[in-house]
Image (cartoon, rainbow, N blue to C red; front, side, top):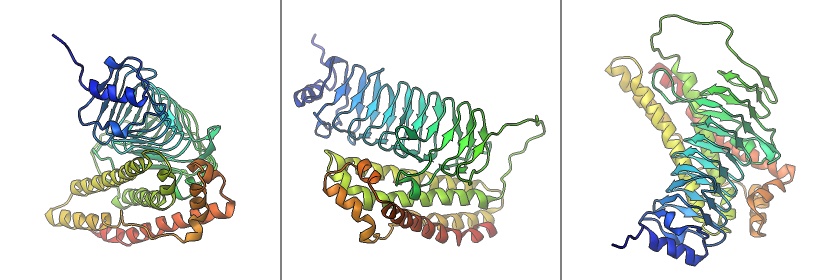
Length: 398
């Protein structure tokens, strides 16, 4: 009896394209994988790799499985991505992003250029801006992080850090912002440092330059810039517990802020980043995937808000009012931002036309140009939050 491994024909096609596969019989490729969406330029696929999903894209220079088996499902990988051992599903990794052995990445993750982490990192609905680095043994779901100017000056999450994103009442309306989109995209802000063996109880927001000491559990916002925070509990608490909901509006307000940041980031991808993707092999497909991750993030946050509204105490009439008010609020987000003035995007558009990479172009921006881009995106955030905040009194009354 002759045994033929599944996907062997696709493996052979990839080898013919120039993909380096040291042991072809150890690779498992699903029938729905399109080999035309896998580059033959400098790609290396090590033994134990599983590739699944018709949406999968693997760009030039990608390396899979250097440290251990890797499974990817419907992931879009930009150039020179390294997934060294683990599992990733319905996520997008831009040029030079990397994760070590034991990573577990689920839907809604977008790791931008040269961001990533060491071994045993768990992510879901997570957005990391360029250079952001996660240590080992980390759970960092439902969070956005920016900050830093280079690989030598980057935002860092220390090992054994947890973003606590699930409440005793079973809610996940807990997205946290570490930095922000309008300032973060220009790669000029001070890095954020979250010390190891610590955590953050979402939803929280920290400003650029924040330093949270090792072992601290952050339970509130750090809105001051370049601020040191060391927190701990010095007293024991033991008392009867009954699940209750605090005031709805402050929690919703933080979700509104997060959703507005997503709208600004989508505007950035639509108007500023698109020309850079156009110059890459499979670039438009990777860009499409990145925007899909933003849509997934928006859908997740809106879904969590709707579920929260449905769980609030009160009679049928009260529930109807809350659900209606929350539905109206949710409709504010995801509307296409207007075209920014041509002069705002001019430097980036020119750089893309000249063949500059995205990071090179952003770093080369003059200060006035960077401020103009920040002002545009801040306007997107302000407009969205303003429309949402006009509905918060209705939600409070409901």
